Amino acid sequence: MDGEATILHADLDAFYASVEQMLNPSLKGKPIAVGGGVVLACSYEAKKFGVRGAMTGREAKKLCPELIFVPGHFNEYQRLGDKAIAILDDYTPLVERISIDEAFADVAGTAHLFGPPLAIAQTVRRRVREEVGLPISIGVARTKHLAKIGSQVAKPNGLCFIDPATELDFLHNLPVGLMWGVGPKTEARLAAIGVTTIGQLAATPGQSLERLLGPAASEKLKALSFNRDPRSIDMDRRARSAGAQAALGRKLPIASVIRPTLRMLADRICSRLRAKSLAGSCVTVRVRFADMHAITRSLTLDAPVAATGIVTEIAEDLVTTALNDHIGERYITLLAISVSHLAYQPVLQLELSMGLAGEARRPGTKRGASRWMADKAMDKVRGRFGWEAIGYANVVLEGTKSVPDGFRELAEKEL
DNA sequence: TCTGGGGTCCTAGGACCC
DNA sequence: TCTGGGGTCCTAGGACCC
Image (cartoon, rainbow, N blue to C red; front, side):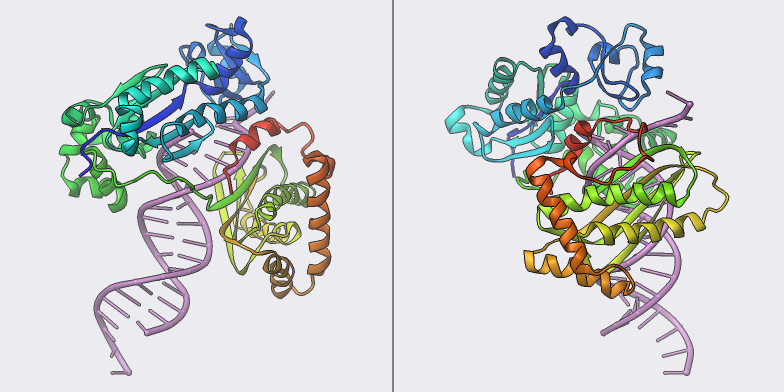
């Protein structure tokens, strides 16, 4: 068995806000928020007042009157995040990037070169501070799950090494909410049967847990509560779906709102797919109503698609059926599309799927060949002049853009 | 003919994570 | 002026096949 603590979980602290404080030292030590209408990220000083991501700017300002809003340097986030995570590559090839500001690394095979894992973690922290200028917390443990918990416990700007000899003592004293997969709902359910620590969860009979959370979740949590985590480092995780969404404010569900919005969303998704020679055979839409409750409708196709026009039309059909099931709703507040069941499409098949799949399904629609030409032309212009050079301009979404495009792009996972 | 059972896919909803 | 955007995984019922 793997008896040694060789997994590192490295997590940049309050990443976007820390970058802003580094770029503008006058912001250091002050409560700041990136964003305006919505808080995209905030500093530890702001968190002390209860400010959180996804809050409206107004709400945040109410909690913390001195809060300073900054627009955000999105290009810098990508560059600095890459630079920090790349430092891990100097100590092992086994690095798994989780998001822009977070990664796992396994240094099991490289101790003879760089010393024990704890020493490597210390070096990485020092180098990120010196070479990138940012605080980073690291957890070191025997499993991914425990390393991740370690980095959370270490924050802000700390290091937490969990000795395998005493790891269960450490783990069992922590609140269940720190476990991967335990969010507010599960935490509340567990609390209802008196389980608030990981130790109490470990001591709960499997049957009661299963009744409460279902077989898969209870089995997983049970294993994790004894630090049995089978996951190893996965160096190239591929996305399984690609999606896009747009918050609309409050809009009547009419064609002049729905059509251009869906076209814009399909355009975003499909150009990403085509750029990677991918196509997907399942299209899902999501409609959210004024009371925040949301519904989804999906359709699985015979062949994968990546043409903007085809995805737009399928999405329109799905949204229409969704709305027909909810006639009483007066306003919609969000539309989303997701394309899944992705498959790699060598160019020839991609061209075919763009045309034939659509025509087979809906004979009356615009011919596949001309769609292929239109998409291809658009991809080409954007390749040369950038995304904004051409697009589906729409008056509908003017002014409702609450989140900058830069932020959106950072959230996109590599396809 | 009737009955049981397993496996897999599709769809809708929900919880969670960054 | 209520409440962003991009993802993953699980559940449960029904269809369908063997």
